[in-house]
Length: 295
Image (cartoon, rainbow, N blue to C red; front, top):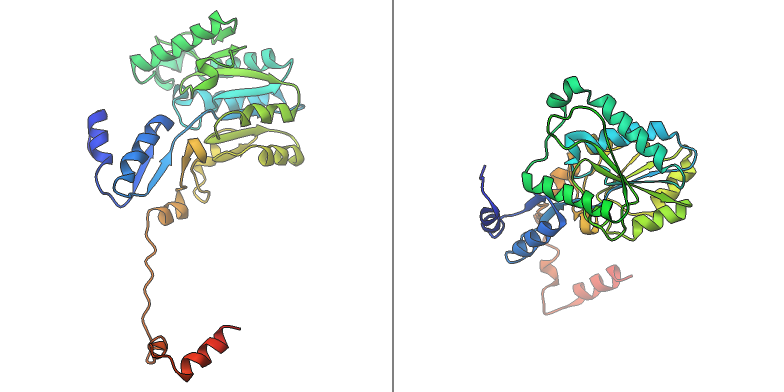
């Protein structure tokens, strides 16, 4: 265990390890990979990004909202696979927003909020989140906050109409703020996802398997939970990892063992070393072997 700041992290990643595993932001992940490249150290990067939750037409909004709220507000949104934003059929934005906040209020009543609901890790990070909300409000977004006593903690917040070019829709939020974005049809929702870097996680709420499959085929992500959030990370028999800007390399369970191992090949010749018989100068045996194995 080595604790420290950025300088310690830089020195650590510059060392010639056999393998480096890093979890954090995409920006820092690039620095880690750059430092590891100097020693040709292989890396596993578990980063993050804007993991979407797609609620499809006909799926119960309140059911989806409970799951989205659970995944989004656990640890106050400071989880790499927390739903970053939600996509919902146009006209259902307000209903989803109200249902998400109602689920948050039910999960963290005043009596238990101080014990069960997390704080933002640093004042700097909280300031970043609050400034992102203000930026959205000044651009015309409608901000809704959960009611109740949050003991100084940042309350669960939903943003309707967040600007496309603003922080909330361009950077990983990593906090208890959920933008809700309307879409006209499923292709439009997938287009919104695909305009961004490939996310670490994807959540699809759909009743029928054909719609689920359309989403799986139409958007690339690190992992997926269908009709739920974040559960795929807890399945030991499933590999976990990102793709593209959300990371590289999978681990957990057997995949983790393979990822952190080197499969070293060892060959031991038998009583007769066939390869030795093929040494030059080449004669009749070599010609026979070429004719036989070259067919």
